[in-house]
Image (cartoon, rainbow, N blue to C red):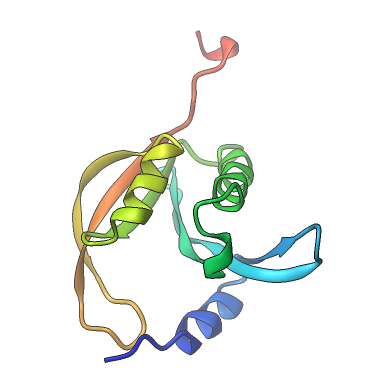
Amino acid sequence: MTFDLQPHLKGALESGGAFVVVDTKTQQIIGSTRFHGYDPEKSEIEIGWTFLARKYWGGRHNAEMKQLMLTHAFRFVEKIVFFVGENNIRSQKATEKIGAVKSGTAKKVYGNRPASLNIRYIIRKPLTEADS
């Protein structure tokens, strides 16, 4: 079974919360990411559906993009949620590197794939001096 990116791109555009990722040196689109699943009662939103061209894996782009999204989202919510495939060790390490903590598992369906187990991660809004 192959991974069909088209449903993700269609869903990203329809969500109204998707972003393209641009390499500022080359002005080339190198990926996308988005917000999803805003839950005002839980004061949380999910960041995910992040795709980067393989050439940009392991560099600064993912961390910078996530930091921008975290900063923006924490203006409105107390928790950011990430779901990462149980066998996607590279993404798990990248998620932990930005400060996310494992908080359980969930079955998720992506595109034309069958449901798969994902690790749930959370980053809580940092306390500020005003909160102390």
